[in-house]
Image (cartoon, rainbow, N blue to C red; front, side, top):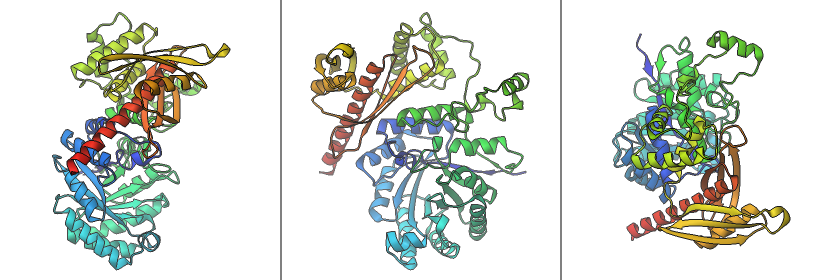
Length: 517
C-alpha cells in the first residue's frame, strides 16, 4: 500500500517566538534551526522578515546555514512584507513564502475593514507577487476556523490559479472541535483535488490543537504546522512531538501516512527550546514532560519491570532518551570519554573550540559536584552555545553575608582581554551583584523576570537561571542564561548574558542602518 507523506511545517521560530517572553536572538534561532534540521523537519518557518531588522537578519542567516530543510518566511498580503520575505530567504537552498489574509466575516469587517471581493483581490496580488521571488508559495486563510466554507472555496480557487501550491487552514483562535475540523478539511480536500496541498495550523486555546490536527490528517490534510513543546501565542500551538509520535505509535489507525521526522532528536529539541526560551514544558506534558516516562505507582513499576509495554506505549529511546549508558563521568574522566558521552547525547557535531570549552566547564563542575548527570552535561553544552558571544564574561563573584550587615558584592568581569573588578551595595545580594555589573559595563539594566531551577536532583545540583532584562525602555527584554552550582554566580552570568544579547542586537541594528544609508 502506498503511504502519503505528512509534511511537517515547524513554526517554533515564528509563531512559537510570539509566545510571551519567548524572544530569541539570531544565534539562538540558528541553533534551534540546526536542531530542526537534525529532526528532518520539512519546512522551517524561520520568522516574519518584515517584523524587524532582527527577524530579517535571523531568517537570512538561517537561509545560509540550513541545507536539508526548506526555509520559509511569513508575510502579510502586503507588497513590502513579501519583498522582505523574498530577500531574506534568497540564499536558501529551498525556499518558500507564506502569505496570508483574514477570511472570516468578523476579521474582514472589524480588522481589515474590507469587502470579500477586496480580500480576494488582495490575496491574488499577494500570491502573484510572491511568485516573482519563489516557485513555492503557501497561502493561509487566517481564521479559517470561523470562515464560511463557500467563501473559503472561492478565495482558494483564486489563489491556486494565481500560483499557490499549499493552502493552509488555520484555526487561529483554537475554536473548533475535531469533528468540525475534519468536516472542513474533507470539503476543502475534495474541492482542490490535486491542485494544492491542504495544510492545518491549529491553536490550543481549548486544549484541542493536536486532536484537531489528527482529525484533519484523517480527512486528507497532508501538511501540519506545529511547534516544539507546543510553544506559541496564548495557549500555544499543536505540539510537533505529540503529532509525530501519535502517527508513529498508532500506525493501526494512521496506516496510510508517515513523516520523515527523526524521532530520536525530539528530546534534544525539546530541551534546547526550553533552555533558550526559559519556558519549560509542564512535568506531565505528553512525550517530553519530566514525568512522561516516570512510574511511581507500585503496580505500574511492577508491570514495567516485568514487561515494558504493560504501561509504556512508547520506548523512551524512541524520542532520544538514553536509558542505559555504561559510561559514568567524573573528575578522572578524560576528553575521549567526555566526547563519547556528548555523542550519545546528540552533541557529536561540536567544533573543537566548543568541545574544549564544554570539557573545561565539566572539569570545574567535577570539583564541586560528586555525581555528574546527563542533564548536567546537556546544560553545560547548551550554556556554552548560548553564551558564545562573550563581550563581557563573568570571572568571579564574591558576596557578603547580608544577614548581619549591608548586602554587598564584588564582581570580576573580563572585557577585551582586561579583567575589571568593582564592588557595590544593594537592597539585597542579587541587587548588589547587578549594580556592580552595571558599574563595570556602564549599562544600567532593569530586571523584568527571573527564574531559577535545579537541573538535576540533590543539594549540589546545578542551578539554571533565566533572566529577562531591559537596558533601554524602547527595546524588548533580552533573555540571558546562567549556569552554576552557586545560584548567585548563575544569576550574574544570566544578567551578563542578557547584556551581551542587547549589545549584539545594537550592533546588528547599526550595521543595518549603515547598509541602508
